[in-house]
Image (cartoon, rainbow, N blue to C red; front, side, top):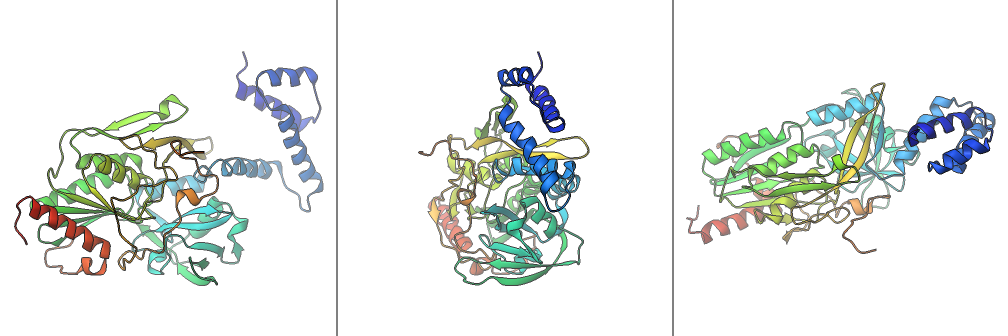
Amino acid sequence: MMRLPRLLGLYLLLITTAYAQDPALDEQARQKGVPVDDLRVFSEVMERIQSAYIEEVDDKTLLRNAIRGMLHELDPHSAYLTPDRFKDLEASTSGEFGGLGIEVTTEEGFIKVVSPLDQTPASKAGIQAGDLILRLNDKMTKELTLSEAVDMMRGEPGSEITLSVLSEGEQQPREITLQRAIISIESVRNRMVEPGYGYLRITQFQNNTGEDARKALEQMKSKGLNGLVLDLRNNPGGVLGSAIEVADLVLDDGLIVYTEGRAQKSRSNHTAEAGDLIKDVPIVVLVNAGSASASEIVAGALQDHERAIILGQRSFGKGSVQTVLPLHDERALKLTTARYYTPDGRSIQAEGIKPDIEVGVDSVELRQGGDGVREADLPRHLRNPGAQDESDTSDEDKTPLASRDYALYQALSILKGIHLSRGGHKQ
């Protein structure tokens, strides 16, 4: 028996080359579930464009645009990856690429900032989570797909691009000219902010983040650790496996995250292995509206296991898993294949992680902005199924980080209180 995709492809080939109806073939296709009438409309649209559009457009361009449109309408995170975009994605997970250092999505056709990455041209220029990018050079973003906008923002280090940016509460956009740089993301940074109290900042989950976080924890533990602040603010996510490794470092056992999708291979359970690296050391996790995806997996797991106190603002709410499916000719699909759930069965899709303690946005250190855009604000976002219809520094570095960051200051106060309640001595 002919498989449906093969039959559909054969039928599409026939109607796009002959434009003729064959009742027998039509009936066979309908019985196999092929949308005959819709495919005929598709072929007619192609024919009309080729014969009547103001400029000549070849079949290859039309089909490529149709593929992009097909994925664009699914959800904000599925995309068609050209060879260049495929290489860019691989580079971003390894931690180095040329660009502005900004995580973006789409909203009503415009480009919206999820979060700027630390110490990049975007963050240094004051671009904030929730900002709307209206124009790239002389091109309105309304005219661009997300992939096209990302392609424009990436480029040779040293080259410039001008962004028209509208921030929340502002009436007029501002022009910002940025110089592209090598975005070499150091995903893990740590320091002792005070004697006995460690600070672990994860900016993005890359292939080596789990091992780097382990080394950072071991280093701080060797200095004596009474409490840890895990900073996931403005962390847009990244490699799922690395997020699981980070959570596993401070969990002794139990479920970390599980995924559910239509395909059997998209369903999985991920559990912690025995051995909490800093057992009995209290943890406060900092999140905000720019904390998305993999960072929400870590926060949700530690919250459900009551291993950490979550402090900050409600997170972004991206509870879906994207799988990169290679195609021929060095192309690929980035396709949403599953939803992930916290150990207690919570889907954070379009909901986010609600902090145990809410703290307003006033961090100078991270340049956080407004309440920010979240997954639920994105067009075509997946519905929640449960919803109703800094590098390591020496002890000589006395930079008063907490004094410039109210959320961190509050986290330290909480950790000190826990330490004292357990019979510890005031430092």
